Image (cartoon, rainbow over all chains, first blue to last red; front, side, top):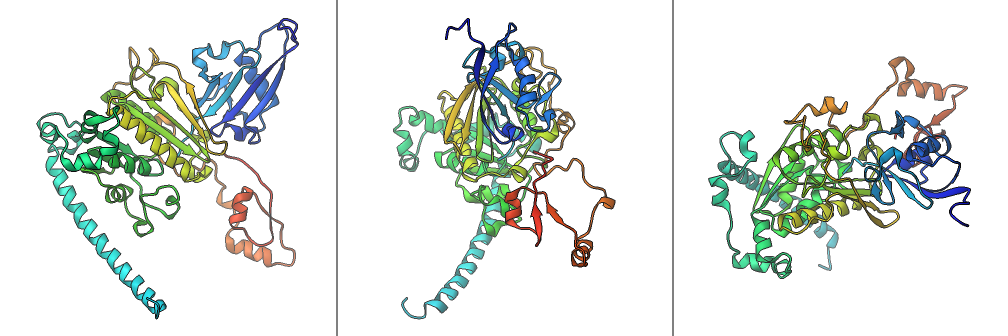
Length: 105
Length: 368
């Protein structure tokens, strides 16, 4: 399939460090996002995740349009801060990981 | 010992208990003696004792290895990356371990074994039975005793000091406090944590890498923080992370490149995966390590984080007395002609550990 005629993008979404507990303990999710004229940004993905994947207590995942403090987002194994945070345009086959920082020892 | 093994073994066991008692007493004496010796090295005001620069430090500096050191450390001395220079650096180094628990115990063993000359241990806590599966330096005989002292008694280090602060544990407030203290003192912070089957590790405030505040300018809401007593942890996981912390510290001390500056190691013990991810660089607008810092001294971390430094259970909303039933009342109800249906809402794993007879398990989650 040619890139331009693609009707959707496939991405890999992962939750770890305890964030998966909000998603029925499922860590890895293969996600198909339908491709309209507007690009998929992390901002848009957060809303989608909240509406489609999140099983409980949304306030522990998102707060005021972004992830709650204490959750790190990685795009293809790099800190999302390096790629533009909420405005990053998600590409086909991207790996997006949400890590809750651990507190224990 | 073919005959009378039974009586012999019980006699021997008695002897062993007696001997252990004597050892404990001797250790106590040694500990007091060491503390006295250590105090002689201190500046008059213990609060100023953190900075060891000056003549005392010079006096204690080791400039060459003795024969025993050469034999003892020979296997790591022959590594070109370490060598005599590295070993001397270790012997003259000081490491402060904050937390003498699941991460601190393995770190302490390996740092001491590698020859780190001065190890400080900070922990307010006392040893409890449910610590022992992961806090491997503590023993049943030491239940209720100070964790700091237990670590000091268990490892062999040229100089080990115990500082007992009122609040030190792995929690958000302590993380900000440690981070700020390290930034203000210009020291690297090798930070790790472990929960359930997972571990995380990174080095803050070193070689241009970010500090904790660069990554997390705002503390997480207190209700989102899960700790070991709530979440559980498999002992070997902090064991692995603590060892990795010791390795990073040894590399920093000996002048080798630290591997986890601006990188976060994610270990998943259940999947068996080590993954290293790239973090952001030091932030110019960071409130403590940035160009115009607003945090220039230690602050009140409890109010900053909205939570105390305890790693114990935090109850957010508890039932009022009117909403509760006492054990006695429940027994009466259960013994009546029409006993109520008893629903146990705890996770199945806790239900399996113990539950009331005739209760049924239906999970109801409210917290992490």
